[in-house]
Image (cartoon, rainbow, N blue to C red):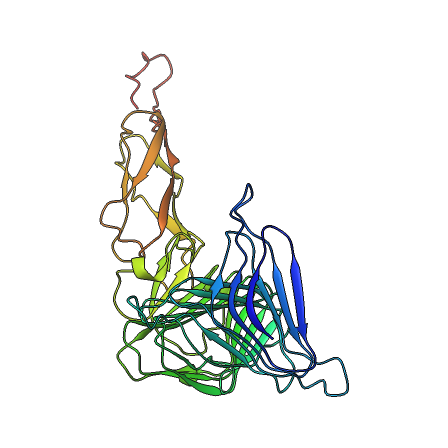
Length: 376
C-alpha cells in the first residue's frame, strides 16, 4: 500500500497485515475549524511500515505499534520521517524484534532538522534515527523505567541533545557511551547503578530527579572524557546518596526553573530545590549593675553535612542600668554556605541591682558613760 494518509480532526487507524505499507505523507492537522488535529495509529502485524513525512497538529499525534499479536509476536520495523518538521509520537509499542526508526532531518534547503518527541507504552527498540543538527530527541515513558546504558542509549546522529523522561522512578544500569548530551529525568527517585561514559563537552549528562538521587556505583558512575560535566538535580543533599561524587552545591534550583543552560557555575554541580536556613540564636545573658557587659554568645544551627561557614555574627546590646535589654544578632563577618538563607533569633540581657551591704561595727562603754559613736 502506498499513498497519503490525512485526518481532519478524527482518529484514523491502519494496520499492515499482508504486506509492507509505505505512506508518502501523514498529516494529523485539521485545516478546518479545529486545527489542533487528531491521532493516527499505524500498526503492523509482522510487516514493515514506512512513512515519508509526518505533519503534526498541535494536539494530534502519531501512534506506532510494531508488535505482532499473531503467530509471530516479535514485531516488524516501523520507520517514520518528518523532514525539517517537529515530530510528536504519542505512543510507541514495539515487539522484541521490531525496530523503531525516527528521522526528522531535511535533505532539502533546511537540513538542520527538528525536534522528535516520542512516548513509549513499552520499551521501544529505537535502532537509528536523526533529528538533524538543530533538533533534539525526547523519549518518554509512563511509570518506572529501568534503562540499560549499554543498550538503552538511542544511537541518534545529528541531534543536539537527547532527553529521556519517566513519570515514575528511573534506574540506570550497565555501561554505555553517549555521543550526544543526554538528560535523564524522573518524576520521583533516580538511581544510577551503572557507568555513563561521554566525550561530549559542556553539560554532558544531566540527571533530574523529582525526589531523591542515589548513586550505588560509587565514584566511577561517570566517565566524562570530553571535558564535559554532570548536573544532578534533586530535593536536598541529606536525603541523597552521592557515592563519592564531588561537585559544587547550588540551593533553591529546580530543573524547570533553573535549566542546565542557565547554570553559570563551573564544573560538576549538585542542584537542590531545598533552600536551607542557617540560624543564629543569641544566648540569654545576665549581669550585675556596674559589672560591665558580659561576653555575648550564640549558637548556629541548620548547616547541612558537607557544608561549612566562616566568620562570626555580630551581637550587640545597649544595656547599662538595671533592667532588661535586647541582644540583637546580625551578620557581622559571618559568611554562610552559598545559597543559604540566614535567620536571626534575638535574646535578652538582664541587668540586676547591685547588692549594697551595711554592717554596723561592734562598740562598748562603761556603765554610766555616754554612748560611743556608732560606726559601720
